[in-house]
Each structure stands twice: as C-alpha cells, then as structure tokens.
Image (cartoon, rainbow over the protein chains, first blue to last red):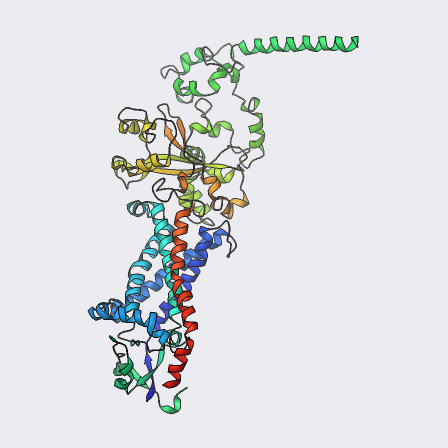
Length: 244
Length: 361
C-alpha cells in the first residue's frame, strides 16, 4: 500500500542557481570549444563574439555560484550537511549507492535513497558534488577570472604559475565539468520516470511514493541495504482525488 | 654574318666599359657599401663631441657606426654643404626617398602620410635593422605620437583585453599588411628585483652580471651552439637563479612594411587567434646587446606550443594550444560519457526487469 506524497525539495534560489549554472556552463562549453579550436569550429560566427559570450556566461556562472553559496552557507546554514559525506555515507553509503547503480538498478530493485530537503543527495552525489562545487567550479571560475583580466591581475597570474599553467588548468577543469555534466544529465533520468528528477528542479516539488509496508518491502533487499529515510515534517500529503 | 660579328664585338666592348666604370664607382669615397672608415670622420670630429655640438646635432659614434648609413657616410645624404659651415649655413636635410624610394612610396599611400616624415619615427644616425630591435622598442616609436592610454581606450571599444594587446603586440603587427609572423621572445624582469614587480626589459648589464661575465646568450644556450632547444628554455624557466626573470613573447611581422593602415581582417581576431600552429612554430629569443641593439637566436620549432614550461608567460588563445592537453581533455570528456553510454546500454537491455517489478508493486 502506498500514498503519493509531495516534498518541497528545491526552493526558488536553488532553482534559479541551478538553471543559471546549467545554461551558463553549456554556453561556456560551446563557446569554449570555438575559442580553443577556432580554425575548425565557428558556432557563433566571429571569434570576438565567442569571446564576449564566453566572458558573459562566465560572469553569470560566477554570480550564480555566489547565489548558491550565500543561500546554503548563510540562509540555510546547512552547506556541510548537504555536501559533506558523513561517516555512514563513507562507510556504507557510497558502496551501497554504487552497487545500486551498477547492479540493483538493472535487477529492478528500488533506490536505497530518496531525497529530502535535509538530505538532498545520496552519498555518491555528495562525494561528486563536493568535488564539483568546492573544487572544479571555484577553480574554473578563479582561473577564468584571471584569464579575463590578465593585465589587472598580472601579479596573481604570475603567482599562480604563469598564463600557460592557468590556461591548462582552466581547460582541463572545464573538460572535467563537461564530463560531469554528461553523467549528471544521464543520472537525472534514472528516477521513477525519466523526468521525475527534473520536475522538482523546475517546480520545486517532488512527488514520491510513501510506503507503509516498509518491513515487507525490504524482505528481499540485498545485504547492506538501508531503508529510505523519510522526513514526515517536510512532506505534504496529497489527497487521493488530487493524484495525477 | 660579318655584321653579326661586329655587333658582338661592340657589345663586348660596352660590357667591359661598364665593368670598369662600376669598379671605379665602388672604389669611390662615400658611395661604397663596404666599411665605414674615413667616410664620416670629418663630420664626427665635431658632431661626436658634446663640447662642440649639442642636442639633436650630437651623434653617438658607436651607435652611428653600426648603422647602414655610416657605410655611405654623412656627405651622401647631406650633400649640399655650404662653404661657410660650421660658422654659418647648414647642409641640406637628408632626403630619405632618394635611396628608400620603395618605402617612401609605401609610406606615401598609408594613413601616416603627411602626419610626419621619416625622422619622426626613425633617427637615421641610430637606426637599426628589424632583427636588432625589440617589439617594445617599435611601440616606443609609435607612442611618441600615440598616447598609450588613449590608444587603449580607443581599442577597448571593440577589442577585448585591449591593454594586454597593446602591451604585448607591436602596433605594426595589426597595422601593416604583413603576411607572415614569428614570435619574438625576450627576457623581462620584475621591477626592484621582485618576481611580481612591474615587468621591464632586462638590460644587457643585468643579464651580463647574471651570466657571470660570460656572453648573455649562454644564460639559455648552455651548449653554445647558437640555437635554443625547448629543453634549454625549460631549464632556464625552472632555474631558481632566474626566478625574477620571465620570457615574454611578441607576435612580430616577418617583413616590416611602411603601409600603415587599418585592416578589417585584424578586427575579427581570427587573423592572429586562428593562425594555428604553423605560425607558432617559428620563434626567436632576443638578447640585448652592449650597444643598444638586439641579437636574436633561433629557437627550436614548437617551443611556443610547449604545454607549460617552454614559454610559461606567453599564450595566444586559439593558436598556441598544446596537442597533448587536447588529448587529455578529450579523454576526460570520454570518461564522462561512460555512464550515459555504458550504463544506458545496460539499462536498455534490462528494461524488462524494472517493468516487471513496477507491475508487481
């Protein structure tokens, strides 16, 4: 037996940040490829246009990064809870999630994790987003800002190893972000339906099945499987007649 | 038949006369392109002496002797000397176009024509060949009239990072129609001995001191073969003794012309930024000489394209990319496609497992 429940998973600042970041990074990737390989690619016409669009998108991504940081670090004060894997995550969670993606998913078993506003990410997501949001993005933004202002920030450019090192760093980090983007978009389709993870990032609310016969359901669960964590205080029951 | 024989004899006679006449001209004082000995001595006896003449009339004999002009001597250009000189009367001004007619013609059709004469940019008594001059010195000539700040502001209306472009490129790279380029590297140092101080050209004396009295080329060219390999460049850059020195590069025209113009193809950036690895293969390292000139030494092909250490402070977006970094970047992106492609494929094959479970629940 199960009821449909709605969880307000993604508040407006996070949705704004996410989509600014998403379109910004896609624009940066497209223009970045033209900037690096201008002799073969010209998506945006002139090289100058590619540079200007790239710089503008870079500033938008930097701005959206500030929104993200400000919201979680100061408004919600739960940056560490959301992004830093805890002991349980490191001991069992990451392996469990890996097993799910590599085996259990193919066998049709349910995900060992469902997102809640307090625990948004599964242990693998936490580890991945920790690297992306605390290393890849800050460094790619920092190196990008240096490359946009080589003359005014000349001292910083020299201190960080010279312009060639910064360009190499910027390029490889950007490639890593693109690689992450491919995985991220694919994993976003692994919900109950291909769009079920996308909806909360657009509307804010996620619709989940609330199972009452938990013990029974877990009878055939593999060893090490932990039941999905529920947080009733942040859930909102949808009356039966409103089920879609 | 006889008529032809006679014509041959006449032609041979005329050629012999021509040979003798040219030999006589070559030996003539003041018109030989040989040495400089005895061609300007009389003039320099006063004009090299600060006590006798001053200001613009003073000529540095060391600098003058190195010029091509010294080989033809003062009277060749200042040819109408009044008998009253130096008490009264001065010789005629040099007419550069008499010898440099092709350049004068180029210059005459350029946007500079009528703005200034040759001497506005070049001092004929100090003039150096393009190989003996640094890119920065070329811009110093331009900045005598074109204020750097104004130029940065004007270019900044359309040119991203105008300040960087104006600092790192000779103006003539964009404002003459040269077709081919090379990268001219030179050694700069941080002002006041600081690694991060304002960059300025390292002088001959400073580099000489650093080289321990040896030729300054040996700071980089360790094996003294008058050729700089990529490894020698890396060693120079990684040497802690050179931590205050940096290699900077300028994209310099291979052939310097005087047809100053505003070229539309430079405005879309692709002229330089898509010039590709062909242009970026050729580079020279330019060392300052004792007499104010520069000596350039050929650098191994591809040094500019070295990933990190060959020229750590020179990068031209789009053109100086390193192929190995491209391959690493591609490998990283391919790594990101493992999940969508590999997992997606297995997901497709096992779709019935999930449909069954969904049906059961």
